Length: 188
Image (cartoon, rainbow, N blue to C red):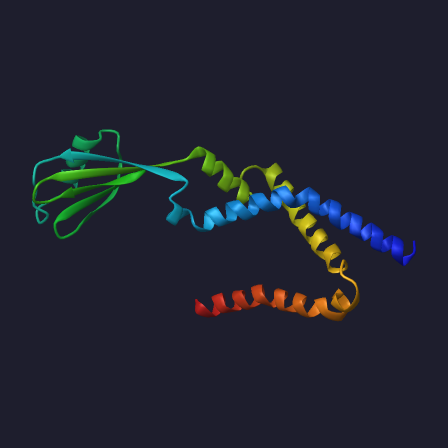
């Protein structure tokens, strides 16, 4: 196989490999952005807020059994994980939320968080923790990305070729994650 045939074959592999993985690249890119900003976008969960009226209480004399009694008046199925007394309120942490009760007037607010099943599945797919088969798909995808990246290195010709120019940009691009790892390690 002469040089022209190798170049033509490389271009075909690069083009077809790129077409093959573009959908997965877009999926990982979009879900990665959403995962990075999920708290500010408020996706992945929903909150339900309910208000209740209880008797006023004194934070200086409250005991764990009193906290359980107050929680049972609000939600008989809730299980208390912990509670915290602040200056003028009691905060009770339950399985999927919390209850805040004001000391002076007994106003109570229960906040319950519930996960969005669709978002949970997308997150699991992105993190390759969905199913063992998806881990293999994800690994295959990573290998395809490496293949497309390497074949792409040899696409340019002339003064912008990898051998004459591209290796410098490649070196800088390779140093960026290495430097970030070093900086993160030094910051700890």
